[in-house]
Length: 120
Image (cartoon, rainbow, N blue to C red; front, side):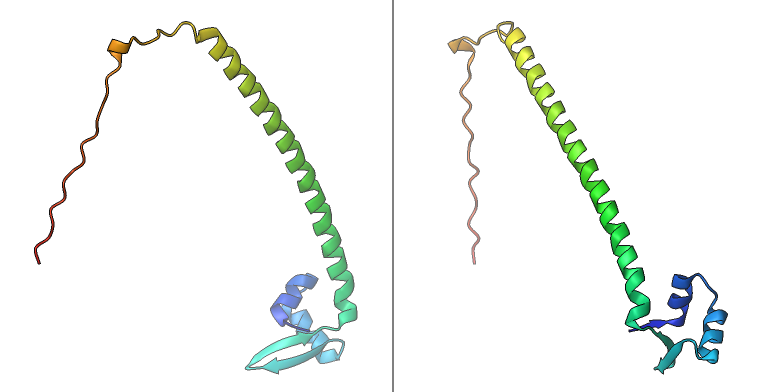
């Protein structure tokens, strides 16, 4: 696997100059492609970092799953409370509304617009 010198320096928390010094001493392998110099990484060097990163990611995912579960529970609780309040209000006020007489109901008919045919 290869990585740019700048990226390698950022990952390691060192300067680009330090990376070039390690390459010059032979403690790091490098290649150059299309004018860009890359550090060659061995799988042994990467594996522990990847494993640590994955462990941290899984910890974060587990925490987020717990938060989501708690939020879902709260949403259900609030939804149930809202439904109970609506049921109460409807039962309390349904008799307070006047019932319409048959004479009060107006039948509304929607007229369809006639479309003109294009001559052509």
